[in-house]
Structure formats: structure tokens, C-alpha cells
Amino acid sequence: MELINWSLSAIDKIFSTRQLLQHEIPCPKDTYPSGYVMDARGRSQMLCLSWLTVEDVEDIYLLGVMIFGLTKKHNVSEQHQSWTDDLPLCQMCGVGTAPNCVYGPDGKGTQSHPNEDGHLRFRGEDGCFLYGVFNGYDGSRVANFASQCLTAELLLEQIKSSHTDADVRRILIQAFDAVEKSYFETIGDALAEKTHLSNYLSPHNENLSFHQLSSQSQKVQERLKELEQEVSGGATAVVALIFSNKLYVANVGSNRVLLCKSTSDGQNQVLQIGRPQNTDNEEELQRLAALGLDSARIRQAGQIAGQSSTRRLGDYRVKFNYSEIDLLSAAKSRPIIAEPEIHGGHSLDNITGFLLLMSEGLMNALESAHGPEQANQEIVAMVAAELAQQSSLEAVAQSVVERVKRLHHDVFVSGRQRAPYCSRHEDMTLLIRTLNYPQNDSALTPTQGGRIYPVSVPYSNSQSTSKTSVTLSLVMPSQGTLTNGTNTASTLEEGTPTPGTQSPTATLQSTNTQTQSSSSSSGDGSLFRQRGSQAAQPDETGRVPPYVDFTQFYQLWGGDHSDGLSSQTGLGPQ
Image (cartoon, rainbow, N blue to C red; front, side):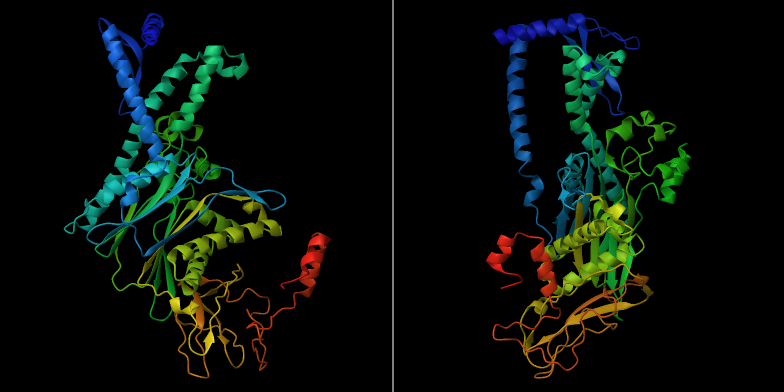
């Protein structure tokens, strides 16, 4: 009963002290202003309530306790599971991820914030597959919400076999629109409270430090910070839909999609589907200029409210408060939109290759290390190399991400020309979907006459040649000589052994229709040094003599470490 009396006193105090602003319309008779709600256009509207009896307060109090308890329980469960957890995953797909990293002067990396990327890879009914990569920022809420909501909008039999390409494109646009509206509905109450509390603070309080504010204003300021964390953030998204063996791509923001097709002559053709919607995109700059914005100034700035993308999901600041942002203040209408760019359908009949969906962080890391000119070809080369070595698509995707991460780090610690661009990288996500692409599972399995050892192929950003292909092979025969890989134009394949004279060859190739990295990372043009006719017979332990004498390396290594460790374990492998 004491709590009810306190509630009545608080309500009476609110009603008796609340004053209307000059532009506000008075509440109807026997009602009083109590707060604000946000309408569909993002405008705050006054909420008027009437007096409550003691019985009403008791009922509301009990109902509130029940709702709060259920909501709290629901929020806790949401952190551990999602309704999409029960959907079947696509088995022709693999995903690799890596968190953001900031390097210190010593080259050691630290994670600056939790991973904000997201992805989806589900198999629906009637040959429908849905994939997506989401690049979140200022939190992962929007990325998580979008991945779940888009799945509900696209994978629950909304797309029929009778639909044309135009129908599918329309459904994709409607799905993104539903995600945008639904997300802002979920944070509508928080936005309304934030608007109300912002109006509560006097304008002259804005220039005061936190400790100079009154105790009540300090509480309001703390609550505003909590609300800002709750409602801030956004995401970019790229979604690939495969239906009736046709590919449809919807892109909002700066993520990237590559389609790699293997041709009959052994080439890997790389097709980038769409362009990043950012401040370097001419079409996007023209769209913004048509709204009255200075496109040259936007291009020079490179970012809008902390992000380079010109299309985003969420991010209420650029959607509702864009007039308060200097670069966007002159816009005639909302400049940052969530409408996707749609491509497709592209027929996948008789196509052998793979589809890559990559977050902006992955491509930015690779481009920072090697430049943007060959980034698409390099990532395809890495994927093709890993597919030739590994049987698990999950392992392939993760290995490629790790390679990009190591490459980015190595450029930073090297101090070379591009080192200043590699002081940090954002979250990285790579999704690989194979399209009738052969994985050389047997390349990791002993076969007649010898054993095949997987090769970690180094990549370089040296001069490129047009229409070239790379084939790197390492044959480890049980008898005879060590055979060096050759530079030929062939497909990803396994050599056919001749009993007694030839053993299987693990072949790694990277080709494309435009440009290709050089075939070797070593200075003299060969990956492995020739040994002529010298035999490479394994010893009694099965080991083959090394190519390089590591004595000096171990001596240098031992000098940089404790003498105790060196004296206990010795130098080099035991």
C-alpha cells in the first residue's frame, strides 16, 4: 500500500508541475499532459491521460510487474537463442569471421569493441536459399535485427515458382522496407523518451559540465546516455537469394559480392555484382546532389556521420535528425536511405564456381594492405587455393579470413609504404557458397605411390600480367626426385598418377579475366628451389631433408629469448 501511495503522489506531482510548451495544443478536458509518443513520421506528439482511481493504480501496478517480468525474461532468452536457430542451414556454404583489431607500436593487437557483424545462410523450401552478411556499427543490434527480420520476410514461402524476376526484385525491396520500419518501431518508445528528456533540460544546461548540473539534471543526463546507447547504431547489408537456380542480390551499403565462374579453358572469371554505395560512388553522389547537397564536399569528407556508406539500415541520427548534420542539413528530403540496389536474376545453369559475400571490414583490410586494384582477384585466388586443399567449407572461409588478417598485420609491422593504412581493421566476415565447384578432398589423402602435403601459398602484390593463370603444385613421391611446380594454364584438378613413375599433384590455381597477381612471391621467380636430380629420400622417421638451413634463424631466435629456455630445450625442433 505504501508503494501505491507513493505512485499516486508521484503522478499528482507530475500532473501539477507539468507545463505546456508554447507550440503545444492543450489536452482535452479532464486530461493532463504526461509525456510524448512518436508518430510514423518520427515527430513527437503529446500524450494526455486522465485521473486514476486507487483500484486503477493497483491494477496497472500488477500488470506492469507482470509485463516487466515477462519482458526481462524474454530479453534474457533472446541473448542465447533466436527463432532462426531451428531453420536448416545450407550445407554448400561456409563462413569465416575475425573481430576488429587495433595495433600498438609493438605490433600487438587489441580488440576495441565486440564483434558487430552478422550473417545468415539458410535453406528454405522449393530450392530457395538465403544468404546475407551484415556490417554493424555502434553496436550489433541493427545487424542482428536485420538478419532475423529479413529471414522472416524472405524465407517463409513469400517467393513462389510463378513469380517473375520483377516480382522477386519487388519482394526484396519490400523486405528491406519492412526491416527498416519494424526496427524503428522497436526503438520508438526509447526515442520518444529521449526527445522528452532532451526538452526537459534547459538550453543553458548544454554548456555546463556534468558536475555543474543539478542532481535532477544529472540523472536526466545519465538516462539520456543510456537511451542513446539503446537507439544508436546501424548496419549495412548484402543479401543473396538463390531461387529456381537464379541468383538475386540486394545491397544496402558498402559490403561486396563476387561471383567467380570457372571457364572451360581453366580461367576463373571474377564478376563484382554491384558497386559499394558510399561517398566514392558517382551514382550515389548524383542522387545526393539532386536533393540539394554538395556532392564534392561529401566526396572530400569521405564519411557521413562516421560512416562512408550512403545507404544504411537503422541509424536514427541520419534518418530523423539529418537537418542537424552539417553535410546533410541542406537536403530537401531524407538523404540516407535503406532502399537496396537489386541485381538479378542471374541464371546459374551450367555454372561452376563460387559466390562470395564479404563485409566491408574484410575488403578494407585487404585493400589497405595491397591497394584496391587487385583486391577482388586476390581474394578469389585465396579462396581457390584453400578449396584445393581443404574439404570443409567452414575451414576454407576461416582460413581465408585469417590469411587476410595476417597479411594486414604483416604490412603494418613491416613499416613499408602501406603500413600507415594498416594500423587497425574492423570486423571481418566472409561467406562462401560453392556452385558445383570441386573440392580436392583426395588431395589430403594418401594415395598410391606417395603422399600429398598441403602447401601454404604466399601472396604478393607485385606486378600483374593480363590473362595469366597460376598453378602451384607440390608432389612428394615415395621414390624418385622432388618435382617443382610449374606455371601452366590448367583447371583446379588432380593429376592422374602413373603407377611407379608419377604421384598425385595438389594443384592450386588463381585466374581471372582482367588481371592476376604474379606467379611467384620469391625474388628469382620460383616458389621452391630446384634440386636437379638429387634424391629427396625420407629418413627413418619419414622426414624429408629441409630446403633451407635454419641454423642462423635459431641462433638469432635464441639470442632474443631467455638463456634458460634455450639451455633447457635447445635450439630448433627436437
